Structures are given as structure tokens and as C-alpha cells.
Amino acid sequence: MNKINQTFMLLLLLSIGFIACTSSELDEMGALVAPTVTEDPSLPSIKIEGTTLHSEAFGNPNDPMIVAIHGGPGADYRSILNFKYLADDGYYVVFYDQRGTGLSQRHDESHYEESKVQFFIDDLAAVIAHYRSSAEQRLILAGHSWGAMLATAYINQNPDKVDQVILAEPGGFTWPQTEAYIDRLFTLKPFTESTNDLLYADQFITGSDHEVLDYKLSLLLTSANNTGDPNVPFFRPGAVLSNITQPYAAENPDEMDFTANLSQYNKSVLFAYSEKNVHYGEEHAKLVSAAYPNVQLEKINGCGHEIINFGWEEFYPIVKAYLN
Amino acid sequence: MKIIIKIIFCIFCGATMTNGQSLNWNNTDTSSSHMTYFNFGLDYGITTEIGYGYKIKKNLPLWLQVDISKPMGGELFDDFKSRAGFQLKAFSHNNFAVIAKMSANYRTHSSELVSMKSWGSEASAAVGWYSSKWMVELEGGFDKAIITQLKHTDVYRGNYDGVQDDWYIPAGGNWFYGFRSGRTFGKNLLVTLEIGVTDAQGSDRNALLPRYLTFGFLKPL
Image (cartoon, each protein chain N blue to C red):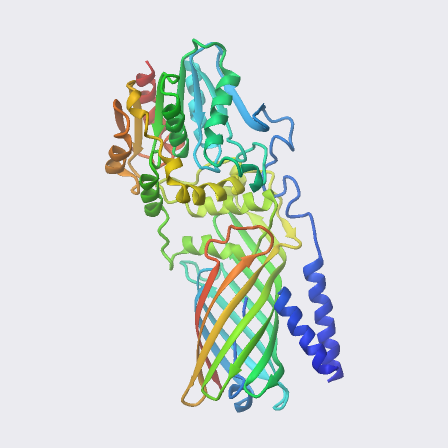
């Protein structure tokens, strides 16, 4: 039994070693995910409202301004970069990664305690203010998915400030609409390889650092992609931001209702939905877009949810005609 | 003293360290020196496991075990987990017993973004009541991914070319807490049902399904 006891003690010490050992390898800057603006000062950025956002603009600053708003929450603007080609058509096109995601500065969960929805709208207002060259400069919002919801949330609070708006497959403008879409989107098929890819990796890597959490989310997003497109390009997802928003929305559905003042927005709205995202479709597009009085509803063929990235060839002439 | 060392070990395992196959220590223990087992259920995917156990000495309450498990999916050998370890009855009184389990594991996983290989260890402690027909157990433990190798595909590199393919130490871990009950049918066929939760080390909340639910079948040979 002495040998057994010695073995116990050895295993005990080894176990303590396993638990106690720490390493900075997984959270080493740049090892798994791209550095943010706070880690790589060479990235284009702007400072607003107590944070630093990854942001850049294309075109003549005095031209009508298009603010491109990415999806998520927790994604980034890499997948909507095709909007920058509108700079060649006489528009000043602004991109920014939302607070806490993409290559923007990271914040811990406590940073979002006071506001979990309104700060998105405030940040959008701050970005507009940062880039706007005059009060007379025309303002166009171009949002994709969650970005289209955010554009609508901004219009709902500022119906007189936006001249035109392009919306690509917003999940919904009320929480029940969004929730129904999410439910259709994330139905797990338990015996498939893709579900396996979603679940199995959780036992290989865990962590508390933004680098690890963002890395795991990037694996998850690609495995969970079932909206009719190939792999979606991204800079770096924001896991903490992503983790706090959906549960909060589910618990506070009133804050996710962006429709109260939309009836005051009588200008034409370009509302696009895709051919291949079977979870969205014409029925949902009509349901969601009905909150606006004046809608130009367009189906974009040959792509799924990532209309800006994979459907640009068909979408661009429609956008150009709408803007003109 | 020996008992104390065993108890400390069990408490430590319970406090610090996925769950090994259980025995009914009131009959499996004495019936044979060999056993096989089969588990099926939800455990980081829909997973199937087969295993073999060997008892070194008749009156030593210690089983050596090896097993391999694999989740469902279209590709046969891209994901699996194998373990080698032991479990022992550290303390018993009437039908109650404290069981300690420890194993080393190797697991692998591939997706279109990355392939992962990981060496790790698991340790747990269970407190249970065992009769000749029925058993119930409460188990807590820790599944440590000690070292994980990540090799990324061109798909991932298309998004971030600076990613480093390397071994990462330590790679993380998951606590687990579960309840298991079982009944012995006929000649020592033990059928178990186990439910539990997992909790990632640190503030990681990305585990999509932090639950496990498995059915098990164990037969001494």
C-alpha cells in the first residue's frame, strides 16, 4: 500500500501542477486573433465616448455621407466593405467596428452595465458627428443584419436626421420578429458534422481573456453559418459584447422595439432580402419592413444573408439607382 | 493515515478536477477482473463511448480502464477522445462509498477552420450508495486540457493570416457536476443514466451545451 500511497501523492502533486500552472500563450497578442486598435496603433481609428473604434472612410469628405453599419452584435465591417465602391460614385463612405468588436477596443462585461442597447445608438451618433463635414451634408445609413436594426433604431430616435437608408436583412424591428428569425436560424441537427464542429471544440480551449473568447466565437460563427453563403470574411468577433446582448434583448424586449416613431419617416427605404437565406424569405421581409411607410423591397438573387459581400454584383445597381 | 491520504485525494479531486464510467461497487467489484462498457448520450455532441476495465487484484478496490469515445458526424476519424486511467473505492461504510477517478486523455477535433489535438487529465470524486441492484452517485470533477495543438486551415488564415500554429499550454478546462443512477439486471448487466452540467474554467461562457446526459451499459466478463 505504501507504493499506492506514493502514487497518490505523486498524482496529487501533478494535479496541483496542472491546475496551478499558467501561461500567456493562449492570450498572447496576435497569436489567435488579430490585434485591436489599442494593441496596433497603425490601425485606422477614432476616439469617441470613452472608447477607441476601428474606423476608416473612403471618398471626398464633403460628398453625401454613407455610414455602413455591420451586423452582429459582435461582428465587424469586413463583410460589408463592398460599400466602399460607392465612393467612386460620389459618396463619402464611413466604416466603423462597433464598440467591443471587430478591431475596436475591448471592454469587460462591467463596461456595459449601464447600457446594453442605447450605447450602440449613441456610438452611431458619435461616429456620424465625427465624420460629418457640415450640418447640410446628406446622411445615408447602410446597415446589414443587426446593422440594419441599429440603423432603424437610430432613425426611430432621429426620424428627421437621415436622408436615405439601405437595409439588408434586419432580423426584426421588434424582439418577437427577431426572436422568431433567430429560432429558425439556429435549429441544431444533432447528428450532423456541423453540429459536432459547434459543440466538440468547447473541451479543447477555455479562457477568460478576450483573445480566447473572440477566437472561440470566430470558430463558432463559421461552423454555425447556415444562411446560404460560403464562409463570411471577418476581422475578429467580439465575444463579450455578443454574449451580453442577446440574453439582455430577450429579457428586455421593449428596448428592442425600434418601431414607435418609424411612421414619421416618410422617405423611401431600400429593404433587401436574399434568395438563399431560407430562414428569412419574402414573408419575413414583408413583416419586418411593414414598420416603414415607404419601402422599396428587393430580392437579391444568387446569395444568402451576406448580401453586401456575396450579392454585391446584383445589389450594387439597385443601390446606385436608389441613391440617385 | 492511509485512509486520510485517500480522503484528501478524493476531496482534492472533487474540488479541482469529464466523468469516467461508474461501477456498482457492491457487485461489479467482486464478480470479475474484466469488464466492458458502452455509453451513449450528449457530451460535447451526441457521443458514443466503448471501454474496457481490468482489476489488478481481487481484493484491491481499484480498476484500470481504457476507453474511446466519438461524436456523431459525417467524418469518421476527425474527432475522438481516448482515456486511460483508474478508479478506486477510497472509503466505504455499509452501502456508502467514496470513489476517486483519474485518467489521462488524448482528444482530437477537426473542422474547416482548425485541427486540434489535446493532451489532458481528468479527475473526479463520487459519493454514492450501492446495493446489489441499485446505485446512486453524486460526482464532481475537473477535465483539464493541459496542452492543445492548433493547426489552422487556409479558411481561417483567409481571415487572419497572423494566426500561430502551435502547442498552447495550458489550454483550459471544464468543471463538471453530475448525478448518476443505475440498476443491475440479470447477471451483472449494469444500466446507468447520468445527468450533469459543465462549467468552463474562468469566465468563458461559450460552451454551447453545458450539459451532459448519457446512458451507460456495463458488463463484467
